Structure formats: structure tokens, C-alpha cells
Length: 329
Image 1 (tube, one colour):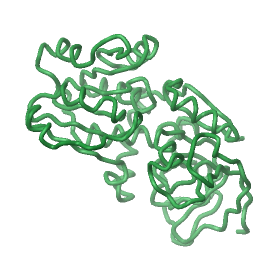
Image 2 (image 1 turned 30 degrees about the vertical axis):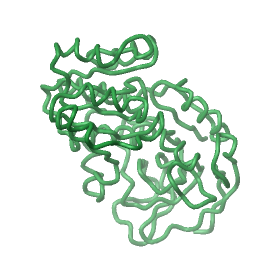
Image 3 (image 1 turned 30 degrees about the horizontal axis):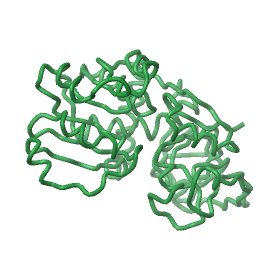
């Protein structure tokens, strides 16, 4: 296969959305363990902004994004589970998903089941697999719990609301407006706290009749750290899986003892789906719930790839609901 010319987003320096540049790049033939994907949709995630700003380090210049869906255009010599023409998706690739065409390691790619669109797959993979590892691996929910999940109206949050409902779990969500709170409830949240008007800790105490919760899932970070700890039962687990408001820093471990011998973990997806077998199993559980209509994808915004900067502005200013995707012809 000859090199393919592809439009892609690149950054040459860290900074705000203005550093995103749409350029033309050459995509070489896939290596032995790679597939070339002509993308139909790309997922936008908060982690993309961390790489843009330099919070997460990557040698410059580089692309952005780790989630997408499309059609296999070429396969490397060592690839056995995929072929040209397959509809595929991925959620944790090497950085560079903001592109029309790209090469991806084949062991990070799964086939898209019938009935799931490219946009749905691109919106589901990273976010849905995140909820899978949070709910089924990091703290395996049994269906009897009441839990707290921050940013319940976001892309990950809306999937979490639906997954919790499917498990029989009472999910208390947090949201920044009445509209977002209503959206989370529509998607399965048991109760939603509007933190712009209500005190999160007081409401959790009230909703749980003083018992608090055994686990908090917190993708917000700095702004919610202390409140999250105050919502936990003794020996409860704080699952800090994101930094939407900034990273949690300078933690005094003694605070965990003072607040009830608490546990804290900072997990990531890659550790939980470290092999193709684990990825395939996690994706199968996710797509199984989609097939049963227990999880439906809420795509709140669509952008052209050329408008990546505007998409980042909307995301960081909390103007988005559900998932955001870049669409390609």
C-alpha cells in the first residue's frame, strides 16, 4: 500500500484551543501488527485537553485523541482477527485519533456489532469501557449499593447512569444545572444533586439517611476531592479517575485516616484492558447492554474536524452534554 494523505489535527506547542492546527500528513503502510482505518467518527474526551495543555506529557509536535471508529483499509502481515472492510472502533489508541486516516495497533481494535453506528461506537468506546472498568473491575458493583458519581450528565456520566440502572444500583449524580440534572435522571440516575444550588455532602447524608456511600466515582478532580471524601462510609473507596477541574495534588494521607480509614485509587483504562482478550471481553459486555437497549448513546454535539478548537472550548466551559464526536464524510 502506498502512503495515504490525510487531514489531521496537530499541535506544535502546548496551550489553549488556538494551538490546534489542521494539517495534511502522510500515513504509511501499516506495520505487521497494525491496521489502517479510514475514520468515520472520532470521540472527544477530556483527556484530550490534558495533552493539549501539557498536563499529560507527550513529545511535541503531536496529534490528539485516542478514540475513533471507521473502516479497515489495510492490515499488517501479522493481523488475524481483522480484515479489509471491517467496521471497527477503538478507545485507547496511541495519541492521534483526530485524523481522517490513521494506523492503529490491531490489538486495540474491535469490530463494531450490527446495529451500532460509527458515531455511536466512537462515542462509546473510551467512555463506555471506562464505566465498564469502574463498575465491573475497580469496584465490582453487586446491585445493592447506593453510589455517588460526579458529572453525571457528561459523556461518561450518562453511560454510568444507565449502567447503574441496569445493575439495580442507586446512582446519586452531581450536575451543574437543572437541565443537566434532569438529563441524568432521564438516563437512570436515582437522584441528582445540582451542586450550583445544593451542598453535595449534606444531600448525600440526607439521601442515604446518614449512612453515606461505599464508593465515590470522581472524574472532576481538584474541586470535588474533599467533598467526595466526606461522602464516603468508613473504609469506603474513593475512585479518582479524572481531572476535569484540575489534578488532585498535595494529598496528606492522614486525611484518609481522619475521615474513616478510607481507600483511594487512581485507575486508568489501559491497566484494566491490557490484553486483547480483556479488551474484547469488556467491549462485549458494553455492546451487550447496547444491544439490549439498556445503554443508549447520547451524542449531544457534533463538530467537523476543522472545528476541533471550538469543540475543546465547549467541553472545557462545561457547555456540552453527553458525548461529543467529530464527524467525517
